[in-house]
Amino acid sequence: MSEPISYGDALSWLDRHINIEKNSHAEFPPPSLEKIREVLVAIGQPQTTYPSIHVTGTNGKGSTSRIITSLLMAHGLRVGTYTSPHLVKINERIMVDSHPIGDLDLLSELYTLKLLEEHSGKVLSWFELMTAAAFSHFDTVGVDVAVVEVGMGGTWDATNVIDGDVSVVTNISLDHVDILGPELSDIAKEKSGIIKPGSSVVLGVEQEDLLPIFLLKESQGAVVLGKEIVIGSNRQAVGGRVLSVTTKRAAYDHLFLPLFGPHQAKNAALAIAAVEEFFSRGLDLDVVKAALERSTSPGRMEVVLRSPLVVLDAAHNPAGMLSAKQSILSDFSTIRSWHVVVSMLEGRDPNAMMIAIDNEKIASIIVAPTRSMRAMDVAKMADAVAKVGKSGIIVDSVTDALETAIESCKPDEGVLLCGSIYAVAEARESILNRSLK
Image (cartoon, rainbow, N blue to C red; front, side):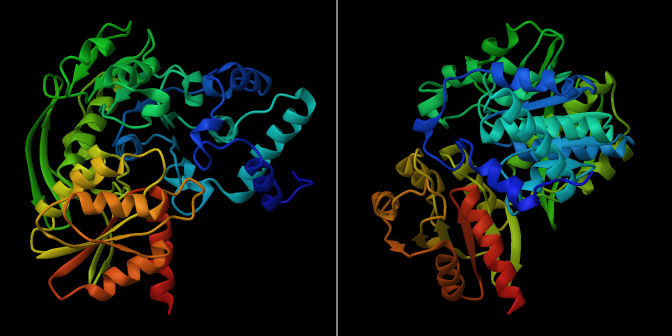
């Protein structure tokens, strides 16, 4: 149909709504799913027309969701995937068979929601609107299954209007403590909210004292990493990792995963277990191999330049920074030293993050602000760098920081950029512009 507003107008309308990703957490409204439920009822409950796999956790949600999508597609299913945040374009959040929603389709979904808001007077948040648009689009195009990544938390996240056939919790560590915390047990309770009586549960939670929070929820049963799910081998290979995974249903050996970092084996194992639970059976080894070989995870230990080596990682909390350190020391062990670009958002713990990433191979640390309104003050980041015994170089922008790091590289040195997804997005844009010059 012909829309009376343009795609740009629709995005401008969307951006006039509260967006916790961009604005201060202080603007976060009282938790409630009432409004998004009412809107979804008004447009026909699209989220009930297909089964779903719901994914939460502190880190690894995006990679796990993408691997699940690849596994489901390898079984011939049409798969809708909803993830956040995006790296380059908003359309990336809503994908069908790994292809982002088209501009006209997104315009149509947003226009419908705009008319409904004007008629009802019920104003949703930015994320609630995108979530409703995703669920509606998946219904419109007729997906066989949706893979839905939680935005933040679980119980009160807008995505929790679905009753996932499978609920996946990748891990629990400290993040968003001002909203979800302050203790790990508080975060675990919030994330356990996605588990419903009809869900099969897949847990990557490693803390024994937290497991009861999930296992005591009413469900169809749970499988746990380290118990029913076991990672056998997990070794570096050219272009990724080679691993083996054993579940309660099957054994999968000699799997090649074209993603960097030892932690990606956990994400792959959880994804395999989730798809097993979805089908209630073991999977064909050749299908699993083919699916994993096609898996991608942009912005997660992503190599964007080879000479010098430049790696981008969306690590944005201490656990993520620790994984980034382990990745560069294991998967890129031939690199003698690293120039690290760090750009964080307010609300993070810069001291804990710098302690997590600090290692003997760091030659320099460059700090810069992102373009986000939540960008952390560079002096605060530089102070955290000084506390680990290094000198922080302050630069005005992520682009300039990346260029400074690249120009500092000797033949056997590399660049790691980390700290926030927004920094990764800016760096990808910078690398693209650099290649076009």
